[in-house]
Amino acid sequence: MQTLIEISNLNLYYSSVHALKNVSLSIPEKAITAFIGPSGCGKSTLLRTMNRMNDMIPGTRIEGKLTIGGTDIYSNEVDVETLRKKVGMVFQQPNPFPKSIYDNIAYGPRLHGIRNKKQLDEIVESSLRAAALWDEVKDHLKRSALSISGGQQQRLCIARALAVNPDILLMDEATSALDPISTLKIEELTQELKNRYTIVMVTHNMHQAARVSDQTAFFLNGEVVEHADTEKLFSNPSDQRTEDYISGRFG
Ligand SMILES: Nc1ncnc2c1ncn2[C@@H]1O[C@H](COP(=O)(O)OP(=O)(O)OP(=O)(O)O)[C@@H](O)[C@H]1O
Image (cartoon, rainbow, N blue to C red; front, side, top):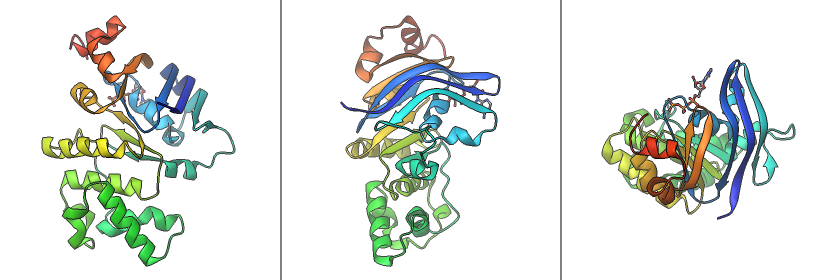
């Protein structure tokens, strides 16, 4: 597998909190990488460094290097808006805009200058299809996005991210607020999406990481303790701390 995201000696501070400590990690393209570890160990922080969401938090300082496709995303030449278009994100709580289903998906493409109705219709349909939501909503695209179920809203948020043609999809505990059936749908969806996108997901649920990811990184106190193929990490971890965590001894 080819590396898409290369993280080298990354340190991140929230004022005096040293949240990421010398993290180095290579993330392969068109595969799913899961971040696991106890609460507060830095999983979401590392995820947010990949589309510079941490820039918005005052007092944040970052050292080290993070490249995507060879480009240092913290260099001065990088346009953060373009970066966020290429690196989409889905959060724990579905957060559709209080607009119609159609307008949620068309929002990003419109922002990037697409005005042609036929072209927008095509993007809306292909994005909803890619997020396995089209059949459920195609007859009421004008209905408010807030009127569909939480699981459908989360797939809508995935469709919204896909509508601007990203390379990477970041998922920050994207199923933890959903019921088991909606969770399963999104897990199945990720297996489709990884053929076209690179997915990095934070999950509290070790079983989910074991079920859906190709590689897993185990975090503890701001450090990456172990990063390996998911099968290897869960069946034969190299580090005693990984073994203790996956066998439920702490966390
Ligand atoms: N905006 C912030 N300001 C200050 N400190 C923060 C901020 N966000 C996170 N932290 C701190 O950084 C550390 C890492 O937090 P982070 O949210 O990345 O961990 P996490 O592994 O994703 O946890 P969880 O699983 O609970 O979401 C924690 O000590 C946390 O308190």
